[in-house]
Image (tube, rainbow, N blue to C red; front, side, top):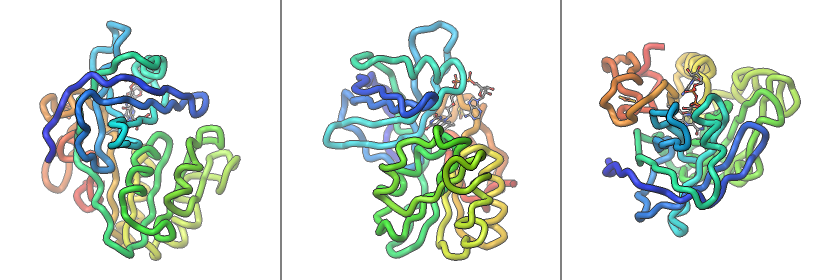
Length: 258
Ligand SMILES: Cc1cc2nc3c(=O)[nH]c(=O)nc-3n(C[C@H](O)[C@H](O)[C@H](O)COP(=O)(O)OP(=O)(O)OC[C@H]3O[C@@H](n4cnc5c(N)ncnc54)[C@H](O)[C@@H]3O)c2cc1C
Ligand code: FES
């Protein structure tokens, strides 16, 4: 496990991807450690006294040469909104690297990576470092509308893309679990990975369990400290009550009491 660090990063880019999602690129003052896909950072959001606790965000991309990491931030409440207002050149304190990561697939395996909403962020990183040929990687990305799908060209470089939208404006109409690649072809995959809303991951876990397929999900329980002290992120599992911030956020579905 890498040592945790807290450091002031400099914002080098903050670009809107659409009306609610922003790409925030941060330059580290110290050489970045090697991150695992699924790990996250806990961000101190300055500029208001009301936002006391740090907010967790998955690592979207890392550039070790530039010494930068990027996050996709979706506006949900006050903290994420304030973070998307940060300007280039401003400083942002991060605690990193936090949590565990997804199990890296073995050479030649076929994988299905499913991201819903802001849960798409760790899936790009996983696809990149999986070491698999793009033909063995299938990315199923779900959002409410076409407008909420972000940076899709980039995902296409690492695998076959499949889309679903609740209103049918891109790809299949409905939830990711209604998409034919999931509904009819789950047996084709050696491993399934998912990150997104709780209800989506539970539905995926149910099907993957029934089909006896290796499946890991990245939980987004509410967090405060991010390093196992406050116990506010507890998830009851078959291994006892575990902290999502330190024992997760990635869990094998067989460990979850779902
Ligand atoms: C490990 C991890 C990785 C994450 N990665 C990303 C990411 O890459 N991109 C991204 O946009 N978001 C990500 N999130 C979610 C992000 O942390 C929350 O959206 C953010 O903390 C909300 O803060 P806020 O101040 O905007 O909202 P708040 O004002 O704190 O909350 C607004 C509302 O949203 C609810 N809420 C807050 N956090 C969550 C959550 N985690 N899950 C469900 N409901 C929540 C609150 O209960 C409240 O009802 C991640 C969360 C975790 C735990
Ligand atoms: S967020 Fe504090 S213990 Fe997990």
